[in-house]
Length: 179
Image (cartoon, rainbow, N blue to C red; front, side):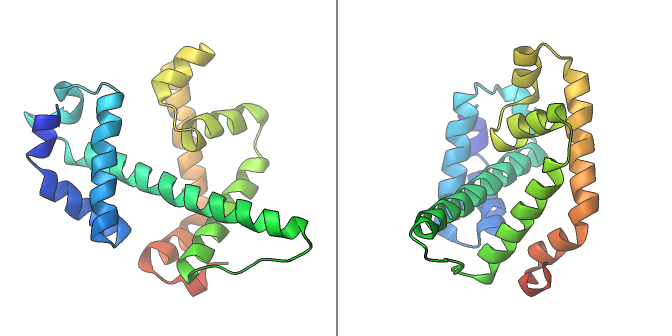
């Protein structure tokens, strides 16, 4: 499987570069993707479409890994801020407008999800926050895979509908327009 992926290594780096904006981060992201796919035991058949690597599948894996890494950076920053706030010091400084915009979108998502039913909150957490696959959730919860897939799809649609303008501004780099 890795041999097949490596044939398009430069393509994966270009895709990752479009997300990270930094060649070193892009290369790290691609290497992490290789490790993740190997650890998950993905086969040639699972990553292929008509005897070639499924580019959409790889883009999705890279994008999800990139989002998780960005979320981890924001959480680390927020954890640091909370440490200082315990001392009575208010910390609201961000390294960039992008960090602030990402934090605002993350806060909006958390606010939206907090109004959902407990089942939906838990499923959202398992899939989007903890990174479990649909199959892992279905097996662990003894719920049909199709039911979980439909729920996750509806979560995506609801969040996209609610946050579409902010997401477009974020991806276009118009960070000052994000509420």
